[in-house]
Length: 271
Image (tube, rainbow, N blue to C red):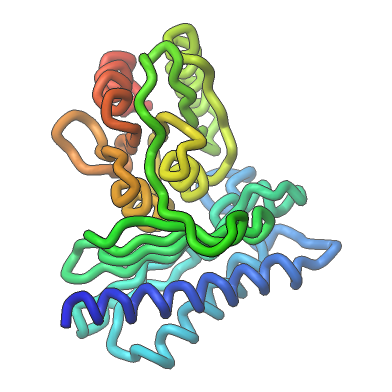
C-alpha cells in the first residue's frame, strides 16, 4: 500500500510539474513584469510564478482534496490526509525574468513530515528529474528513455566542482561572497546557477560534486534533496542537522563531509 501510494503521488507530481512547466515555457509574455517583491527589491515574483502555483494546487486539490500544501507563492493549507505538497512553481525566477534557461518547477510530496516523492522539471533543458523514497532517482528528456541517476565518484576536495547561491539582501550577499572567496582556492571551482532545485539535480546527475547555500526555504530544496539522496548524495545542514534555513549542504560521499566542515569553520551558516 505504501509503495502504491508513493507511486501515485509521484505520478501526480510528474503531471503537475509537466503542465506547469509547459505553461511557464510557452506562456511567458514578451513584456513579463514583476508582480511584487519579497525579501528585497531584487527578490521578485512574476505573474507567471503565481499562475503556475495556482495550476499546480488546483490540479492536486481536484485529485486529492484532503492533502495539504506549502507553496512559495502563498499556498498554505494544513490538510487532513497526512500528505503535504511542498511546491516551488518557479525556482529561478530572476533567470526566468531575464530569459535565462536555468529555472525549474519543483514539487515534493511529504507523508507525515518525510519527503516520499519529488519531481523537478527543467523545461528549457528538456529534462525532468524524479525520485521515490527508497526507490532511486532517475531522469528523462535528454537521454533515450529513463536514465538512473548516480552521483559521480568523489574526487579530492581540491578537484571538486561545487555550486552555491547568494541571498537577495546586499549585506548578506557580501558575507556569502567572503565565504566563497575562502572556498575557491580549496576547490576546483564554484558555480552559481540560480536554481537550488537544478543544482541538487545536477549533483544527482554527476554534473557537480557538491552544493551549499544559506537561507533556503523547504520549497527550494524538498524535491531536489530527495533526488540527490536517492542518487547517492549525502545532504544536511550544519554538522548533525538537517538541511534548513541556516545552511543546506549536499555532496558526494567524500566531498560532503570536508565541505560541511569548511562551511562550519568559515561561518557560512550565519549572516
